[in-house]
Length: 132
Image (cartoon, rainbow, N blue to C red):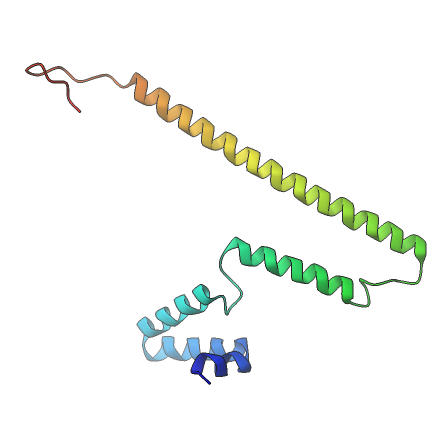
């Protein structure tokens, strides 16, 4: 069993303790360890894709928890299911809105760049050659 596997068995507190220790002993080694922990996803940070996966796991854990299962009250369970469905739809709509907003901002910036480029005065022609 490798060192990383043994540290994983001990959990995040072991990794954090090792990180603090390496920063105390030699900060460049601590910095390298921090980069490794972030890159490998061992500390639960990193890319958006990992966050989305974590969100799905939380939803599944909620559904399996005593609060996520049936409450024994059919009316409340129906209300909760409708509310969760509505919230998921609103989340999707909001993400779509943010995507459209980013695209509009990118288009506006590009249009401004092209307008600035077109309005930029050309330099004088020297010996029949135009400057690049």
